Length: 248
Ligand SMILES: [Zn+2]
Figure 1 (spheres, rainbow, N blue to C red):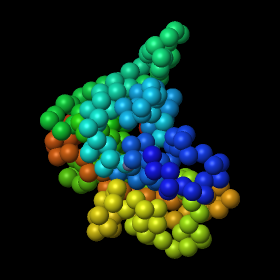
Figure 2: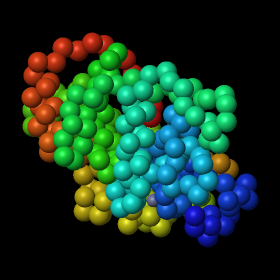
Figure 3: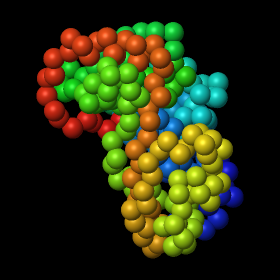
């Protein structure tokens, strides 16, 4: 962890993992679908990057994930959780009682050289997981767009993100690249020219809590093999429901 990036952290902690930081490199990791996303602690996914036994709880830069030598460990854990229902898993030190995991209860419907694809059994939701770790959530509309030969885009949801330091009210004037640059993490994301394909909108900033809110709508660049499979698959797919997706 790079402690120097949060010298003004209000809680004064420097050694506790912060969910807003990349759990691999320790730098700020504002979520951008397809480039940086979070894993909730209650999913009980073992953290392959932690020196001590622990469950992952926080964000990951997908660039760090893909470059990591432990991405295959993450992939195995993540895809197990994706398919798990209600299951018992060992506690961190192996002592009883075991912990109960609630997985996403999805079913694998495609396995290729680069990725696997999972489908929810109860709603019109899919997940593409690259073997190098990054994952992409897809809706029914996304699959219809894939069927039309288009690149799916994430929904324009408002994302709350706690900054490591106060960047001042100018943050409201920043574009996406400037915001990432001000946090010192632009190199963990796609190059500036590619970021232009992302619709970014500043929503709000609350300095007392360093809380930034922004909306992004980003292209989801899934592997071509998944695109080809899903384009064919959606032609005969019958929708089951329109429930909201579960968070990972
Ligand atoms: Zn990182």
